[in-house]
Length: 81
Image 1 (cartoon, helix red, strand yellow):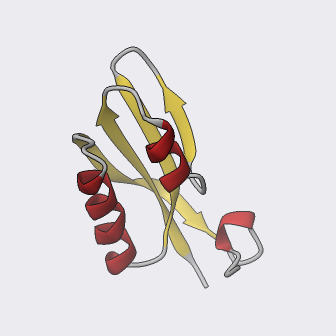
Image 2 (cartoon, one colour; image 1 turned 60 degrees about the vertical axis):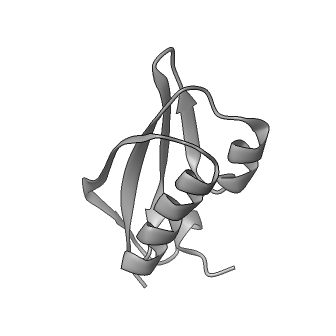
């Protein structure tokens, strides 16, 4: 199975609850906010991540697919659990 890698930028600092909710993503924080990077397997998954951000009160500044960011089968992010 192939998935796409996405980056989500959000305003402000992440709470511990948000860090736990996105524990399967790489998180980079800076003075302006945070960047969450991880695999997205389909549109429903993408919408679920956006809904989770809304539930946690995060303001999404941008969300985009990283060009060439396909995650091949066998990569740790591609594992099905």
